[in-house]
Image 1 (cartoon, helix red, strand yellow):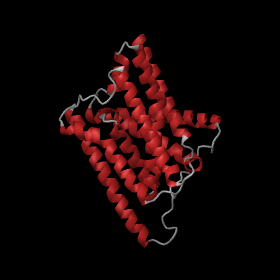
Image 2 (tube, rainbow, N blue to C red; image 1 turned 30 degrees about the vertical axis):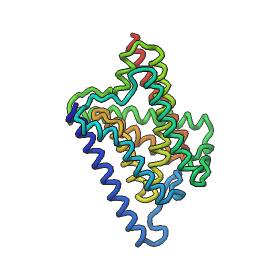
Image 3 (cartoon, rainbow, N blue to C red; image 1 turned 90 degrees about the horizontal axis):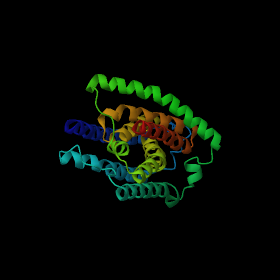
Image 4 (spheres, rainbow, N blue to C red; image 1 turned 60 degrees about the horizontal axis):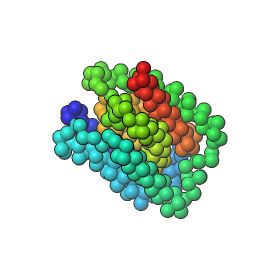
Length: 275
């Protein structure tokens, strides 16, 4: 496990280094390009973001990778960054929610931007959001299964469960189960989609392009979870969510899809435990 964690940490460094290099190159290209040479296709708003957002995005990425780097530095793969008891689970959920709110407010209201138009919150009806979410998951599942198979060919069959998942399966505390389930189905999708799809993706897209940003933020999403065996399916899921966001321009779509995906997995795990 220690070796796997080191590999994940190295991938994180490569990911950040690649993003930094590409952003510098893209900035240089834009200075010498004529107006309109570098287009920003899709429905996700990127032009409102500026270099201040790029700097904040860099700080946010560094913060997200700190636990992974710290775990590698301490040479332990068993450090529990998740919830082992009810109070810890609630504290983590509330802190995560606060982080998501801060990113949301900074990206929109604190920078003088309208969050409804910036994130496309009123672009689709609830029915269309649900349909897009279901379609995204139907596309994601077979691709994720294929990704798992390919990864197993490379590194062998390894346990894919994250610590929070093992806690959910292993505990008999119904209160803890409820808190973890709410965190997985509501808090995590909301916070992670605000951060990765809502903020990091358009900011990096603004200075590097749609495809590069989609790939790198999806890879970052997978790396941050710190689980090498689950990295390929997480990357595929994140990429599908990014594409869905780009096609619709509505942040509710990846939030709903992410929530639906987690709800299906939580229900499956609880059924296994009970059955």
